[in-house]
Image (cartoon, rainbow, N blue to C red):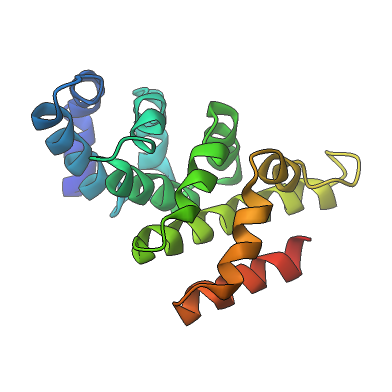
Length: 178
């Protein structure tokens, strides 16, 4: 049996959900690392188990927590990379866009900025697919949500970041979606 699936089948996610809600960093940090380690090696079926266990909701506030934002961003990024369009829409519906956009402003967090840009690009791809299917009246609603979250301005500003890969990723997103 797949070890990741064995962990999921053992029912750890409901308990991890409780631990993520704990205000004590010495409790929530290890729980977040466990979720991150599991989610980085799973497929969309196993991501669905994470969603059904309610793990996403307590992750979003952790994106704004100085002690947890990097690990929480990594989990969200992995969901946008490995999840289905429906699972990515679920993230958006839960409110992930604004806190992801807010993480684009710390110039010292190069890795976090990179994964947030990649996560936003994955979200934009889903929005574009929905637009092309005629589900959103010829509008990428996720692009508009990024604008509303002041993310477009932040992405534009990243074109002059010290890291060339961040500059390139920002330009690529801007050219493709705006």
